[in-house]
Length: 210
Image (cartoon, rainbow, N blue to C red; front, side, top):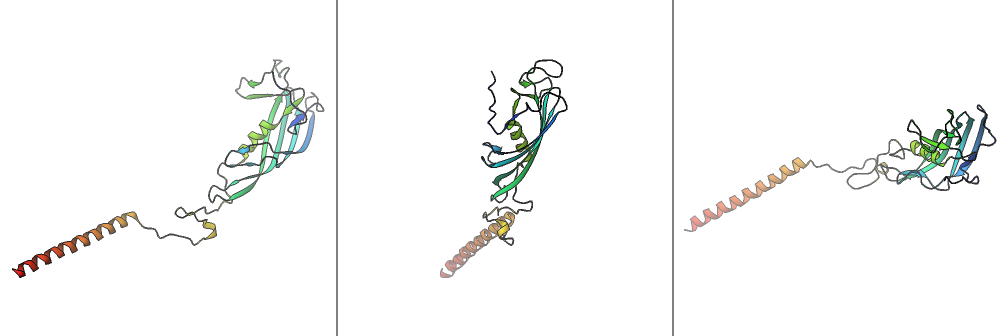
């Protein structure tokens, strides 16, 4: 048994005024508080309780109510390059059909779940619909998976971790490991030659003493 929707929830909308007259329209604007976990977890999202501005267009059709709208809010996260906190204005667009539970356009009883085309069916309940799942999907799609504070952010130095935008001339002397290996061989060779020369000189001294 499906739970009833609470009309006091700011993300629940009432369509009774629209009626079931195909072609009837209703426009709504509403500012709501962001629900928890609105965004990409651990990456970027709209903080819980922050305002989300909704603009909706409700259209009555044979099957139910077609909802078209936009959601605007400020998302917060960390830049993936420099790891600094950042804020991003997000505008998400969506369109969703909320179906009458008694019958669809072919006279069949509508059930929640998947329809014949594999798409989720969202039902109107006592003339109400819950926008939260639609809002979540739309915001996630509108947010970047790799957020950056700006397109040309230089990120962090791979060697010492300094923020490169704070020191554009920052650099480390690069050492080619192939040359480093050759230098090591060269040092070893010189040390070997010194040892050999030392041994030869010792042999000459012994002969002279004899």
